[in-house]
Length: 190
Image (cartoon, rainbow, N blue to C red; front, side, top):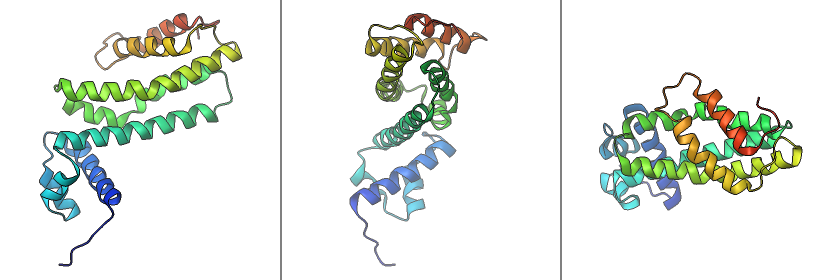
């Protein structure tokens, strides 16, 4: 069989895509580097040329999903002509659509190091979007918030507990949104 040579970034992306598929379908723990190598018809060692470990490869998958979600979130907000309040509802309801992250979370929840990375990635990617939306709400009269950046950080930190995976309260979304609107000084509590 002839050896196929590919550009570094193209090969790296193929590995990330195959890993993503396997991690989501089989779970992180049940996926072996050999499964990924076999699918791509490459040697195991080639994967380790691009990634130090399977966890390093997982971080690349998380980065890719986070970037896609961030792009999707920006597009949703930019395309919406309504108020910032409407966009805020869209943003926090979109969280339910983080399907790929949730499938990865199931297998990773027990690993504090990996979960810390995932939470940090989500937090730092969403903070500027939310701060921009809060500033927009100040302009359109949805609320009156003195410091959009600080409010975004505060809301996202609180949202981890209020609207997170382990919150058992039946009205967690409604109560979480109500608290967010109070933090922002919303003129209406919809």
